[in-house]
Image 1: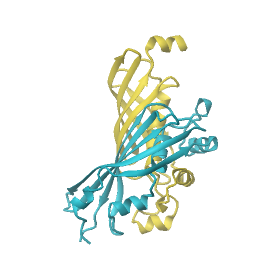
Image 2: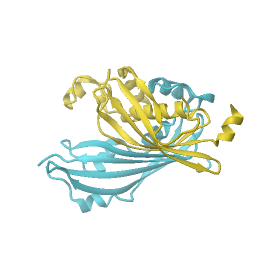
Image 3: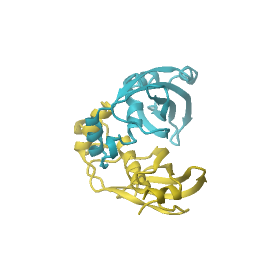
Length: 147
Length: 148
């Protein structure tokens, strides 16, 4: 489903990660220059009292929200802002789902701005990220002309 | 160990951090896309979360140094609370970006269990080589003080 004509209450198609990868956390630790060992060292995870699985970087979990919004908005859309709160951890092997719902649609001279509530939820129902986002979409006439 | 004096901590508000620069290599874009479970974008455009990556790599100080500024003891816990990300224009690979960073508000509140939670807002702007703003990331760090 795309954001062809967004309306209040529309549910954004979810983005699902079946099993969060510990290997990807190592890659992101390098790219983020993040030396925190809870992302790659099980001894450090245990010492921190966080259990027996490495912890996903918050930025990576937040990226799942962007993946959802971009897939919905299509190549002509753009995420303008995201504000969120980190409420819990995602661990290696977790099944997580990014979701969202449209809360406001603003018609502008050069397009449409869509406000959404967004979240990332673990399979146990805990929402580890909650927040809001604004996605810019081209005006319908422009989109029709380019499709 | 008791929490540091709040007036001392508040001296940090407004402090300019060194900032830095960042050039995103095309191979980093590709590796990040895979690690973020994201499809590759047209023209090799970086994932928008690179604005957050730029803000972390472009602080100009390490997280350990930030903890020192916040007078974090080994028994205290550093957490990331809220983040507000504003995108003005998409980033691209191969461009040299500059980052400016500063500390915003510093505050303290008492937690429900009677503990002390200090908040430190860090604001990072990412600019292109013409000094046009590409975006801004405002992160609120939480320092949960150990109970004395």
